Amino acid sequence: MSFNAFLFQALNGLSAASGLFFVAAGLSLIFGVTRIVNIAHGSLYMIGTYIAYSIATKVGGAVGFWGGIVLTALLVALIGAAIEILLLRRIYRAPELFQLLATFALVLVINDATLWIWGPEDLLGPRAPGLTGSIEVLGRRLPTYDIFLIFVGPFVLWMLHLALAKTRFGRLMRAATQDREMVGALGVNQAMLFTGVFALGALLAGLGGALQIAREPATLATDLIVIGDAFVVVVVGGMGSISGAYLAAVIIAEVKALCIGLGVVSFGGFTVNFSKLTLVAEFLVMAAVLIARPYGLLGREQVAVRSVAEPEEPLRPATPVTKIAGLILLVVLVCLPLIAKSSPYTLVLGIDVLIAVLFATSLHFIMGPGGMHSFGHAAYFGLGAYGAALLVKWFAAPMGLALAAAPVLALVGALLFGWFAVRLSGVYLAMLTLAFAQIVWAAVFQWETLTGGSNGVLGIWPSAPFDTRGPFYFLTLALAALGVLLLRKFLFAPFGYAMRAGRDSPLRAEAIGLDVKRVHWLAFAIAGAVCGIAGGLFAFAKGSISPETIGVSRSIDGLVMVLLGGIQTLTGPIVGASVYAVLQDFMMRSTEYWRALLGGIILLLVLAFPSGIVGGFVKLISRGKTTSKAAS
Image 1 (tube, rainbow, N blue to C red):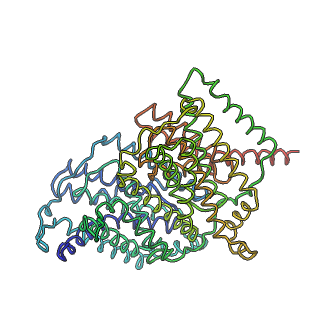
Image 2: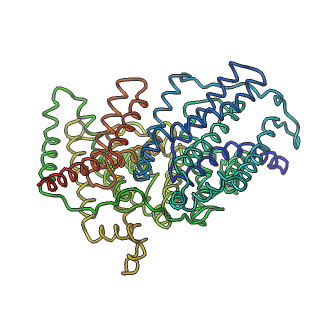
């Protein structure tokens, strides 16, 4: 690539950086003040693209396009304020991860609402009036609208800096980022501050989406794609740093643009297709930055936030009543093939639920007792699934050997990724796990000669005697029960107590001689191995696998299962996975708008049980006992 071509690609990267910066800046502001990891921020960006498209096409001309961009930003700001007032304000006292669950439910609702209003087709807006041409730069034609976007990003960055430095609202935002409880203690109306910040963040997301309609179509897949990119930008730049967000957006956009410009490059006898790296370039950048600088390029260590949620009860061994209930449930599951003899699909659903339980329980092992929030647990699920499937496809391995290899391959991946991840904490740890999962996904998606690429691996069916539903169901039940009991055994062994000590008070744990990082690293490995068993079972249950097995959506599904049941209880992930899997299956077969219905139910459950289904029932029972004692 010539030097002129290099500079031209760099200019292309700068124009793409503006869109990334707008959505990332809004996400950073919201998290900095409210401490909410707002997954629905990508949905606000998506709504911005659709609203701007509608105004531009209905009104037409310069007024419709440019006026529509401004009006869209204001409308999305109002939508963001309404979300904060009607929903998030009701759950600020809930644990932070349950707020994440609520925003995920919003993603489902908003996506189907958008589908209902605008339909499933991609919608490409008109070209920008007054900026429809192009100019010659370095011997190539660059659209004038892209040049406009290059300057819009720094201008908005400058305006934000002025607002944060020169206005009372900006000073309050900076103060709340450092210590929001102290701001409230000084008499500041926190509710109004949070609403204002959420509206400002939504305005930036809507503006970023509206500005893209002349470059990209409005599509329903935008929400999760954009939120993934936005999280990467925010984390690379440093949580709460607006300048860091712009710097990270420029770096990531430039890396992607240069990968496209380099194309296929030969190094001696090796050929590298850099254009394929665009799928994972930002995650490679994020992983490198977090390993070298754990709090981002311009970030700093987050100040500990005094929790407003109720303190977590210590884990206790199962009571006799719980053991009897578990035994009864096991008997029912063993008898399920006889109970559901007239409904063969029940066994299929039962297998899916058991695999989901094993997946969610392994994730809860590191999230609950370990206190390590993973956004990329699907990596180990996928490593187990692909490991088993590829052994069968390429080496004709028997089913038993393939299933035995699944947890081993997942264990190796968890040992590698966990060694880096446990050196971080909080959102930074979660985002590093997401980066590793996306790197695995990109490798699977692009290594067509080995994994089949987007087509996946086909024809992976169980061998005798497990080639019918009944025997395979019993095999899945046995391995799921074994995995759950094994994790429980670890939790009540000295290792489990050491893991929880490192979560609750790492300094004290290290003072008494515990190697906290080593304990948490081993916990990562154990959870990854058990998750690999679930992946191996999934490959044989479906008969085929594809890159979706490792996608972000599966990791999010695991988070939802754990949080829905209750992260503070051992039975929470079992109940959450069962409820989520059954609800998702039933609604997908019932209506085209199943996401909105599922999201609505999740929202109701979050509002009714802010500590999860099991956690909510435990609190109700304890309150009942307290009331009866007081009455007596």
